[in-house]
Image 1 (tube, helix red, strand yellow):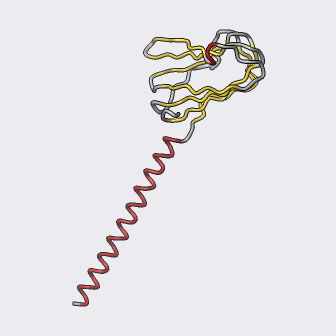
Image 2: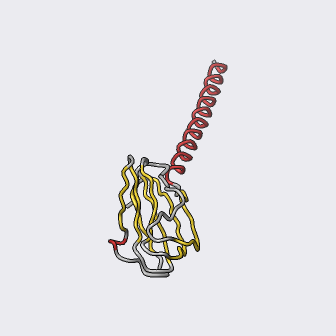
Image 3: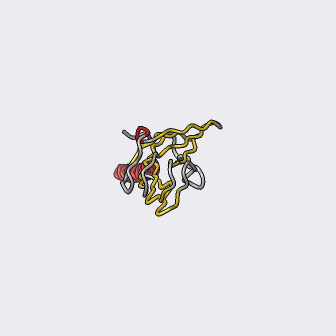
Length: 145
């Protein structure tokens, strides 16, 4: 009888260890997946770049890696002007003025949150020739706010 009890205890201990190990592995997998979904992704970074009026600022448009997502845009220019978002989806392009169409003040920092879907390409344009003092665009997976 003591042999059976010992084998039973050993079996229970082995099962407990196996379950614990499996649960740790599953938890790590889901934690890694969650972190990959919520970690911000740098999409564009420019400093002290020359900008020509009403032309695309980025050399190529950007798209989100997750859909939907929020693009957080931080920008500052050497001259006052209107910043526009150029959004292309299914071959159709629209231009949306940021800051309610009002000019950004020279040498001031601005931040904008833009909602985007996976099948959209995004670029920016500025209404005047200027020096782009700083541009940072990060993707925040999911729709924030």
